[in-house]
Length: 281
Image (tube, rainbow, N blue to C red):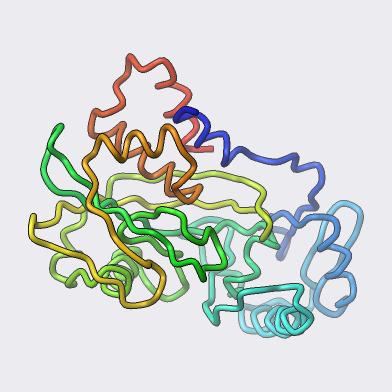
């Protein structure tokens, strides 16, 4: 195994099997053919054709679109077509800073291949070869990647919160990091990928943060996401990401990005260029 295997795990699928999802003429997602057929049963909301899917033209405002789509999604959830309902709204837009065309239940985002966003934070102590990183293990009851390793803090980006607000909220819920300390996290860039998963097409952009934690800090989980935490020497983190698939698929990318930025993967590494390119798939 190698770092490149972690990149390859998030490689894009054959988009030819998908239909473009448009809202008011704007491309916002990609829908697989079999799910497109399901949406065809709701012609008052979705117009399905051979070359794509569009919201009905008379749904021409944010509130109308949100209510109409939500009604369909709740019906599909009752039929178990959509699983893991969260009651958490994600904005559907043409870009991160563009106004939302409508809001969509988080559990349905991948089925529509809509771009989603998240915040991931690397929590560490020390520097150089003496650095250690806090790692979380996801609960076995998680629908997504149960039992896999994770960042100390990570979460999807819902509607209504800024990135920093969301990071502080997730820090409290997932690791009991006080707001004053979480607010010191440094924004360090992002990673992106497009990949096919059982839950649909993941087109995600993760905003990454680094936070140097006090040596005596110990995280405590409050929301059931994480079953336990480990404080690992950086060499153990490197070996685990490189040689195993123990990390959740996207968390591996965030760790690799951290290792590159902190000089643990140097430019003379045989796969350096491919790794840098692959972190922005």
